[in-house]
Image 1 (cartoon, helix red, strand yellow):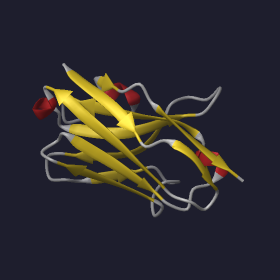
Image 2: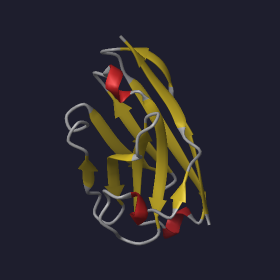
Image 3: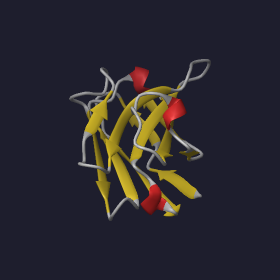
Length: 124
């Protein structure tokens, strides 16, 4: 089992920045992939970014590329998402996720473990 805890959400003005962090505990060494998803009210949970521990490849949603940067630290124990130039439409609950197999990273079904989520609110 892997436990994931997200921190770093909050309220920020449009154009501002936030840094989300996800700390993994338990059998984090068994994970191949970690990612961020977000879910706005009344919408589906959407892929934001992911990082593969096998080679360090990173993946981004179209709207995140160029504004968000995903990084991993400390031998799979911590993952961060630096979010710059935030827009009102980035407002959502952001979830950290981990996969126990090397999967295509864009779908929620690829991930076995999820955090509780952290709220990001961008005001205009």
